[in-house]
Image 1 (cartoon, rainbow, N blue to C red):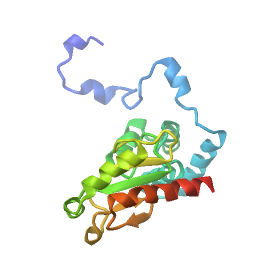
Image 2: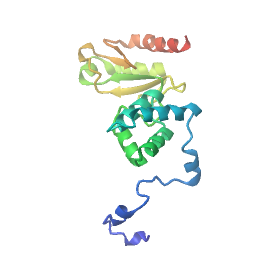
Image 3: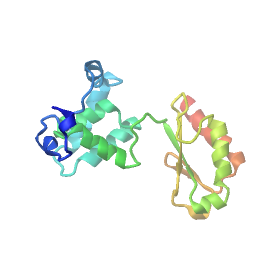
Image 4: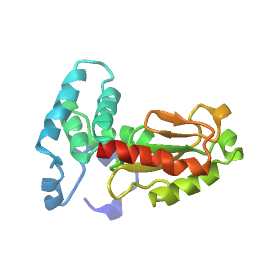
Amino acid sequence: MDASKCTGCGTCMEACPVRYEVQLPETVKLARTAYAKATDEEVVADIIDRYREERGNLLPILLDINRQFNWLPRPALEHVADELGAPLTEIIRVASFYNAFSLVPRGKHIVNICLGTGCFVKGSPKLLDRLEKTLKIKHGQTTKDFLFTLEVVRCIGCCALGPALRVGADTYGRVSPEQVPEIIDSYRKSVSL
């Protein structure tokens, strides 16, 4: 194909046999399907099989994979694409659209700090500052031990209890900056038990 003759009409895209295939160098292509553990492939296969016959099965499959790994590993997305006969680009498009999914590894405990109006005016920026100091990371980052990921959200649904934060499924309301280390330590201790 001579790119200098392209008019932008899109005809080549319609006829392209590799239109949805991600083009990678050969070494990357060989390495990209490696799961972290040998059992991970079986877990993903079981999740896919659970929803295989359901219409609109992509979201439930991705949700279960995200719950299992706390993110969507690339090999799992490729596995889903292969099993469902869907282009990988479509799977990634859906996965990157919803904020419930993560395409990067996250910590065991997701810490959501609310910066919505109700919490903001009641002091959540001070909580965020204290969380960043306690965890030694900035929001959007994960601790080196993969125990915590700190995320800023606009609402966790308890404005009357602001400032609020959530660790996994546990919600804490009317939190003062002084309470933050104690809250975080309780999750650290639960891991060591």
